[in-house]
Length: 96
Image (tube, rainbow, N blue to C red; front, side, top):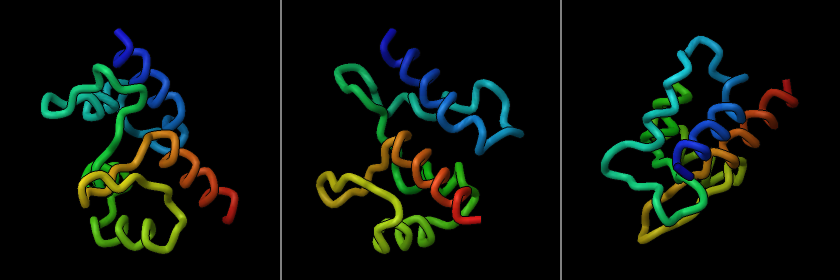
């Protein structure tokens, strides 16, 4: 139940940035390999963020390295919260 609430919350946070995607696009956040049970926030991989933004993974790594996008380093794997992604996109919108 919490995962469904979190997915709805994340979709509301990111909806302004992805207006052409349908209401079920956020289902990729709760894919089978990643279980949100027991966690408070779903974390996205670099590949998932790149797919959502339609950029390369190298671009996402570069933005993280530059410090514009907050991330977690878990066992040498970068993970990004939906909230941090929404904040990054909002900051990019404010710059233009």
